Length: 302
Length: 226
Image 1 (tube, rainbow over the protein chains, first blue to last red):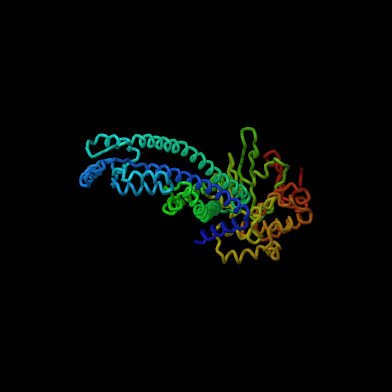
Image 2: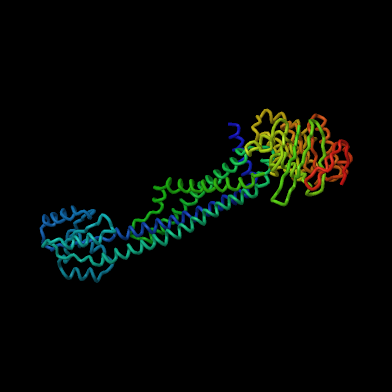
């Protein structure tokens, strides 16, 4: 107990009496953590954007205008039971017209043409959402094979092209993005490792003296390990304090940029708080402790 | 107290720094080990504090054969041998009192013991008024006295002084030697490693002279020969 108290005392004494070195160490850790979290933000945003765009892609079957509701409901149920289908939504003629009017409310020419027509020209439709967006192509093929006389048209060739493009783009982003993130994180971790080594290098004389006055390994190593814990804890707490306001400021810009899509990076960080910052804390702690042990070992050979 | 038998030490194949050295030092002796740079004095000190090990021969300190001392045992050896160096080796971010207390703290000394011993050793070395100063706030002589105080906290039977006056002017050097003599009077064996001719000649005590890793002279009331 006395030994632990002294180890903690030596550590805090060292941090306080080398305050500028301690501040510099924490700033470097903060910069590295900020870079890592910025990459996480970019990655999550791009993934969410791709997913949101995919989810916007629906597959529609247009039904003949005068088809009775019971027949449409029967078709809806049979499609809903298909393995690759997540849900089917029925849009009636009236709903389709209301949506159309809402969509073109700022276009008087289209609305005037609709009025001149004097009747609802739109067909009812079934909007089909696939369970797995990557298998949307297979689902489209299955839908093509449905033989039902109430189906007026099933034009979803454009969707297949868009889906393929999005899948290709997200695949590329994942491949290149992961590589860049890996390089960047590795660089950040190396910077952290070397920062701690340099910090301990400045203490090499002290380590040597500790050894010479008969300090045991525990007293030589543990204060630096404890300091590494303090540096990690402080930098993680500060990055949390910095990053949440940063995300709060960023979120409205993301909402404007991805208008109509549900992308909420702030919510992602709140929902995944422990996995994001807990993991970062543990990784940085392991690196700091490892760097401390390696560096102290080097100077404690006296 | 100390018995070295036919000890040899080499760095590499050609650089033999200790060559078949044998000597014994009795309890309460004051011994000066002299010699020019490269004579093997510092290697001898390093062997006595467990920093180096001999390639051949045997080294015994008290009842402890430290010839093949393990790294784990070294801290315990160093708590039994007080050591002071030319460059004082004080922790710059600790006060003089904290530097002295540190040697006790890292060896598990109780708070009560530290509170009792630190002021008393600071008084012995004449630094009772400067306990709260940092090393950069005191003179070289005072730094060395603080280092001696630190070396004394474990009440060692042996005090090893490796060129303790090397960085000091004549006045401060004499004060340090007088302090070492006083410590020796209390019964502590003092081994003074130096190449300061005036100091050695003034002492008129046992002088071991080394050259090229060998002992070339061992006089009970000797002078600086080289």
